[in-house]
Amino acid sequence: EAQVTQNPRYLITVTGKKLTVTCSQNMNHEYMSWYRQDPGLGLRQIYYSMNVEVTDKGDVPEGYKVSRKEKRNFPLILESPSPNQTSLYFCASSTVAGGAPDTQYFGPGTRLTVL
Amino acid sequence: AQTVTQSQPEMSVQEAETVTLSCTYDTSESDYYLFWYKQPPSRQMILVIRQEAYKQQNATENRFSVNFQKAAKSFSLKISDSQLGDAAMYFCAYRRNAGGTSYGKLTFGQGTILTVHP
Image (cartoon, rainbow over all chains, first blue to last red; front, side):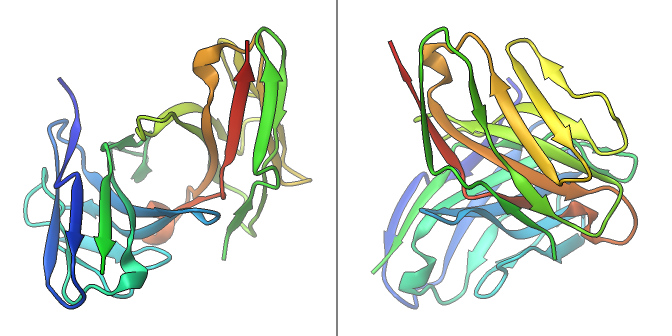
């Protein structure tokens, strides 16, 4: 089954404790992206990757890191989480058509709470 | 910078009726894509329909169609014969389609919650 998986699905942590949210896709997609969803603000893109070893900032990259060492994986790293990073996080992937990402497939989301 | 605005936080419709969700955007680009995504309570994000800016014909997918007004920078979604399963949050999104590295960037609106009454 074609899918994007995220782990963990739910996480409660404390301020300053480094964490990683994993994202994996089995569709051989070149493009992957991370979003956060907050009430009243919709979805905002954090980082995206057009292919292995190619990453770029979205609209809200501060406080986050990513890496793309393999095509299927795109982990999101919070080096020192803060309460304002409490949010619902989505990973997405797509093929690249004509040099740009095509229809995106989203993971199930990760609910993160930072105390 | 591109912005996407959904001015209707909530909408409701009777089953079998038609509803239109509004979206406006601001960009200086001429080549871009617009999308409508559906997010049901399960939180999955499902692509409903997409429109390429250089195509004048409005996109249609079964009961879903768009009214794309490029000059007005408006991209509304019409749902015909509404069904209970259409109840969800709907997001409008924009992506540029030419040049540079920022064509990987997707900008979403704030979302519209659609309620369908039986």
